[in-house]
Image (cartoon, rainbow, N blue to C red; front, side, top):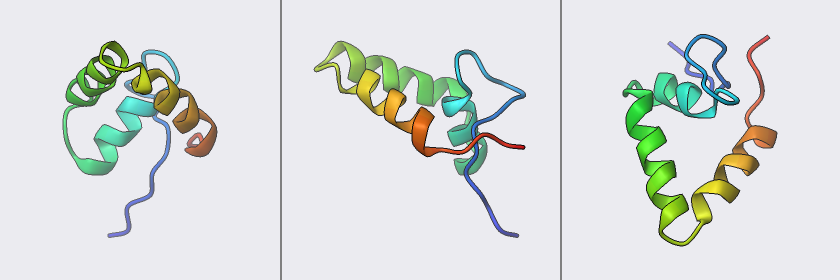
Length: 61
C-alpha cells in the first residue's frame, strides 16, 4: 500500500497540515499539533515550518 502525504480535509483545524501528517504517519494529529505549538513557543520555528508545509504539501483533491 502506497502512502501519499496530503493536507487533510476531514480533521483539519486551520489548513489540514497536522491532520495530513497524522494520517501519513498513522499517529494522532493532536501530537503533531502539540509539537508545532512547542516549536512555536521555543524559538518560533513551528510557525515558519507550518506555513512552509501549507505551500509544499498538496491538498487532497
